[in-house]
Image (tube, rainbow, N blue to C red):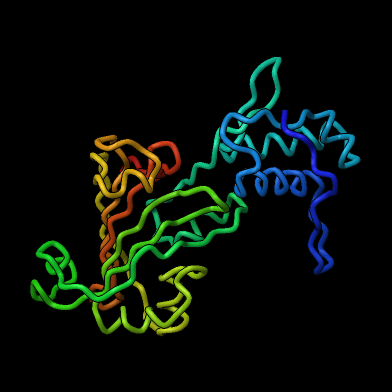
Length: 252
């Protein structure tokens, strides 16, 4: 069983104290996201939480219920609570940045920039961005992380004029969508999406922590401005156990 922390996590300093169950939930999420509690780890018991945080059993159970609803913890009858791993849920009903997608989990996000350079566009990228094949575009490859957990690999391409401006900004800690809107004054309108399960590209398998020829999620996304101009074409790869998609479909 995982040990309890020696000290309680800090609460907000803005005068608004979080409910105790959220303090406990956030501490567990922090331990999961930084790799202290890995998949399969047995978490402290309700009694341990009650003692350490000075809360009732109802509050301790409320914290674990919130973690279960988020999909990061599972309860095993007679054994306790175990880490099931972070799993992000992306809504297909609206266009979200990575940070916006992860916000409900309450986990800090960042990106490792794996590649940022000017390259000639191949035919598929050129068609998506509406430029001539061989034209210069900006290639941006990022490992998207929640804490220390890799959620996805994002291989993106941008028109040179936009990409060159983004190259000067903080792409590790800020989402491209927000940088476009707040720093470049670009109005993002919508995106065309294609979702499939396909064989992982060999070069990406080690980065995703899967074997060559394993099948992974692949989301192809072309983001456009309000006026319909292509802003970014991406191929987003993720393991099947860390990213899922949700959409509400009306009957009529």
